[in-house]
Amino acid sequence: MRTAFVTSLVIVRMFFGCPSIVSADESRPNIVVILCDDLGYGDVHCLVPGTCRIATPCADQLAAEGMIFTDAHSGSSVCTPTRYGLLTGRYSWRTTLQHGVVTGYEPSLIAEDRPTVASFLKAAGYDTAIIGKWHLNFNYTHPKTQEILKRKDHKLPPIGSRITDGPISRGFDFYHGFHHAREMKAVIENQTVIQHDDEINMLPRLTRESERYIRQRSASDPPFFLYIPLGSPHTPIVPSAAWQGRSRLGPYGDFVMETDAVVGAVCDVLKERHLDENTLVILTSDNGCSKAADIQQLAKLGHIVSGPYRGSKADLWDGGHRVPFIAKWPGRIAPSSHSDQLICHVDLFATMADIIGRPLPADSAEDSVSYLPAFRGEPIQTTRKGVIHHSISGHFAYRLGPWKLLLAKGSGGWSSPTEKQAAKLPKVQLYNMQTDPAETTSLAEQHPEIVEQLLTQLTSDVRRGRSTDGPDSSNDVNGIQLWKTKPRE
Image (cartoon, rainbow, N blue to C red; front, side, top):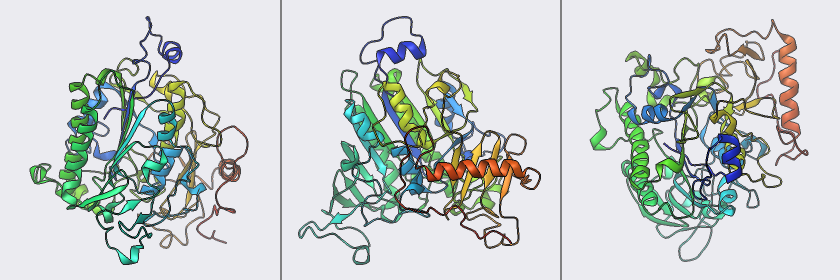
């Protein structure tokens, strides 16, 4: 997929050394961010060709035309927190959501006055659209009485229900999609539930709507930010009839292939509309592969969903949050290039600001660092010491250089040993990710000084309300609990 980022003339010339003056349109590229749902690092063939048995020709082509980031991480190993962080540049555990995900029929997790990537780019003259899964909460109101609907009374919100605090109120000009997997049948456009439809039709729907949106654009229009958070290959695993049996790995493999085809469709329509040369496309995932994919059966068939990394969705181990991340930007990113620099989804906001040459809004993006220099093959300039990882149960980990500290005895998530199963194991884990990327041998006892260093920095980043330089901010809740599992005495 291709994501377009915004750039001022000065920034384009300074950062990319363009030999000639760039037109106004060329200096403000379109941005397309495709966020897959539960797509593991090992599910993209070009990332781990030795253990990926699923064909992903469109993602592979995107990588051939752009850059693969091999050390990219979602803000959490589960859905909602990642989406919050991507849109706000702030870790989700700074909100009231300390573990798990939201389930709808509640006020938006994004505060009304908090800037988002969408509102920021909209203020800069961009048209903004989201086509896909929101999963950040909003309220539905009854189409006649205007009363706020309760989940206990409605398996699905009625057709005609209105949304009071959805994407349109958080910076997007257009929204077509659904809230989360269990409400996928409720199709929403802008602020209204427009119909109920079978889940198997959602991925083709999102493909068509994305194509339609891009076809409405032309090179003379204002630039656009198109955020495509797909609901696949998350459950329900429902590949369309045309894709069933294609992978020979079962429904999950088929669904991954159909998801990959969305990337190709988006890229094709960008080319059709002569927009591809001035568009930045980013393809990534919200977390690792889910156990619902039948990970063990896939492994028996030779397909390893997390590639060389331990764990999967929900876990603190890297298989839970190290994600595919491919970026293409013609003329700005060298084809078939790689970056091993550490980045996180919370960094999208600062990167956008860097590209368009505008300062971040006040009191926003407290954890965000621009990875624009990495596009040029240069070191990322950061005031953030490390990256914080978070599991479905709220367990913390901290990555600083090659070192990774886990405040958990086991996976911190769904993989074995879970925290209950690991009750008698040491209270922390420490791994050197350069020498032991599979997290097989904890070095906590051998390096207590590194454990202390990382724990001190993690504690500071949590308490300051931000992990980047700047005035101290505040978390939305007091006394965030760093230790979710009682340490062994």
